[in-house]
Length: 262
Image 1 (cartoon, helix red, strand yellow):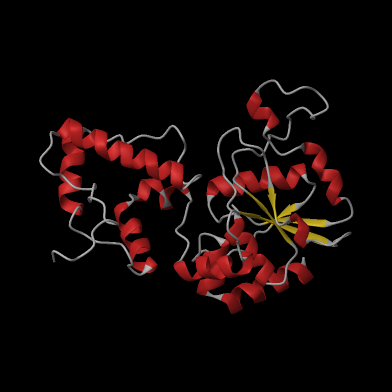
Image 2: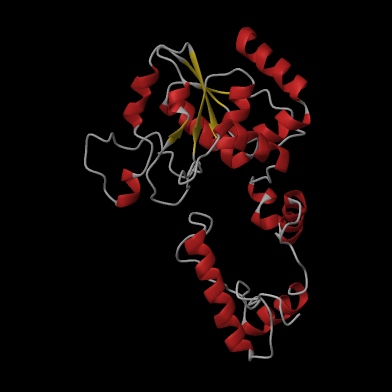
């Protein structure tokens, strides 16, 4: 061991090494801040660890001997899904994307070093459409989905699809046109009502997540773009990528019947 080169090693910091609970929390907060700076867009810049020093100390002591480095990503996914409460995801209409869906989408996107294909959904952020270059001129129909993964699943199903990066910036139907100056910074971030003219002559179908908040947002978006809301969901599934993975054949049949029989 004396001849073993340890110059490239660093001390393991995610560990309670006997310091006070207050000092431990400062250390973990610093690690969290460094992680936010390294992996931009995962957490809001202002986010902090809200656990009390005593509760954080218990959590660190329970987790510090568990090694996740080099683990199968699906194991990490399942651990995260187990630890996150239902109130934080599923009961709010948000669903965990299976690892094989993520792998498929990464292959389709083929991201290169320095690229950042994930659209952020921050309040007041600029409104983006995902996959606009995937549509040709004068498309006879355009489908709208919520998020990149759902959009890519519709593309895989053979549909000309666009994705919105969240439902919070869809304006109400009685909002003023952008011809007037926005009353506040959040108004400037919303979908421009004048975008409806980009889809003149196209059949617009809105297919957001299968839950009440997204249904309401879908109706607003459909009214704004003079389109329609897809209403033939299989209620066993909460979002598009879940349905696509769980029953691809059934989803394709449902989409085909909807397109050509409504």
